[in-house]
Image 1: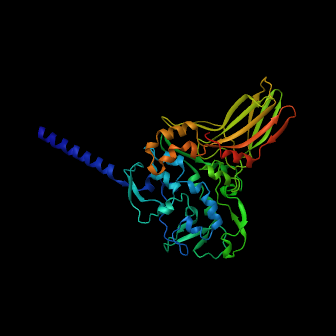
Image 2 (image 1 turned 135 degrees about the vertical axis):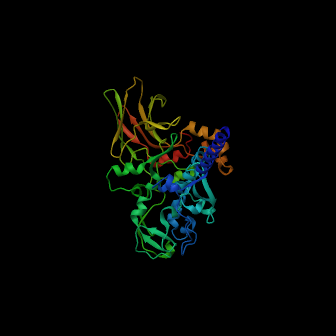
Image 3 (image 1 turned 45 degrees about the vertical axis):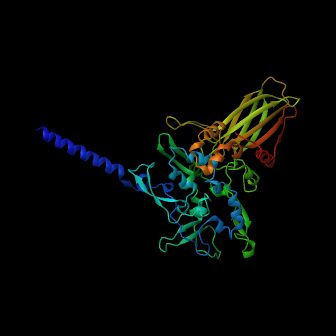
Length: 438
């Protein structure tokens, strides 16, 4: 009897072990773990493009010279080298392969191909070498091919997706303006929980669609410009094109990019509708007039800091008040949004303050768009040991190399004359080059 029990116990343990090992080692397709999620996989390997060669931005720039120069100054071009991103990517808890699907979205940019997930675990990707890996293309971040190049399913050849037509390029082209316009949503419109503390929350597309306007992401982030699509020596006609600087909230990835923000299309989403003093109160009215989505949007840790100071007749600051516009999240032990006072498109934010009993001659108001808090970059410096050597030195110097915020609105209000003088945006961005921290 004891022998029979021992045999059954041995078989039970063996069977249980086999089942455990099978389940733990089985390879689950990415599509099964993340059904219908475009961001879960990169764009398939792209063969060389006829008339161009490898589908790199550099090769595209051989003809599209002006567009290429704009793109090189863009946030997209810096998507991989972004110091903050590299610090976040290096965290032991980071699902690196998922994050890279938006920051280097083409398979040619990846050293390995993810063939599946062990036991469906996103932290255990199965990788094989990518024979089509292109290190030059990898460094280009969100490169031209991200939006403009795909593979023909019948002929297995690369082609360019155009938005206008009527041209005679040396490469295959298909016109699909709708696909180009919708491409932004694949990365800029997602809320997904990988676990209770790893949440991606980017609802810019949903916010835009809710306005029911005819605007697209390109309407603001790729302003129209009349020019030839290609270099002058090709003698092509002047047409309606789009700038490719992809300017966002006015906080660029490096300080040297400040000089290009306004040229490439930046203007604040919010405007200072009114600043007045009456009935012993200071009233500041901000309106989202220029952004067809909430401000701030995208990264949930972005916010506006509003600063009001009182200046006496000798030019000394004797009074100061601050408030913020944005989201507040707690990230541990579980990610949760606790407040949100952002401004939807067409709506306003009113800040009312009791007038202090002080000898104030002038009030100065400032709005600062903050992308990265000082305490967050402090932590990044402390944990830079996780960062690959290629980027570690930059993380260690993040305070000096990486713009944390930008001053985007400034005005002075004279109490005696009730007059207001706004600082030109061009002047603010000259000063932003020398600002450090949030």
